[in-house]
Image 1 (cartoon, rainbow, N blue to C red):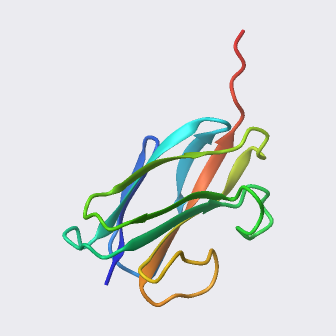
Image 2 (cartoon, rainbow, N blue to C red; image 1 turned 90 degrees about the vertical axis):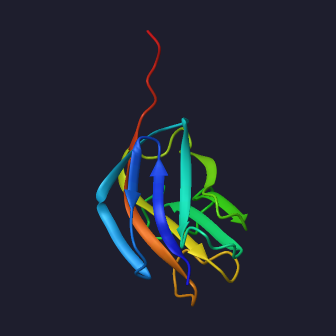
Length: 136
């Protein structure tokens, strides 16, 4: 069985154990608009070499789903035992404030944003979107 072992976004980091679904929405990740935030996703067990399918979404328009254009922030497949490294960018003009960030890992192809799948895990976080700073 594969699971999400650690999620790092910008300065935020959260280790976890296998549970199928974890509601970590009490954890807030700061995300300024138009900034590329580094993301590192690690799976467990660490020595596993299965093909892992990762997806990350944000409910940017706060309509309760992840189905709208631009809400898929990362899609990556990896067979490595090493963590997946990438970046996510909140579009300029995205609504400021708190919204849901979903991270999913599946062994059977890219996971859907909502619903169930047999092998993998989903974790939800809160994304705090802030406006871009203007230069004086």
